Length: 116
Picture 1: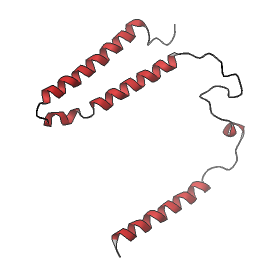
Picture 2: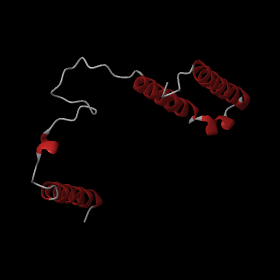
Picture 3: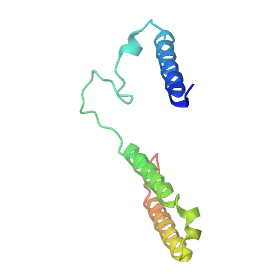
């Protein structure tokens, strides 16, 4: 048997089996909570003009900021294989210092205080 038809047959059969299992496994008894739309903890039937805390947005932005830091620093271990690894480490250190200064500034300004 050729390798390509065997792989295609295994893939197709595995996909069909998993699709059939996914229809049988979930419980078929929906209740009010399962049928209601999830709106981030807000009542979906109430008014859309309810005030909410902007601190949630601060937490989300901080998460994105540090997630971006990780994405920018991921290639760093391969930086020692470049022709000028010190330049790569200098720029990585610059990114870390800027982020640390921003975090210190937020801390001093009280932006990280959840309860007032």
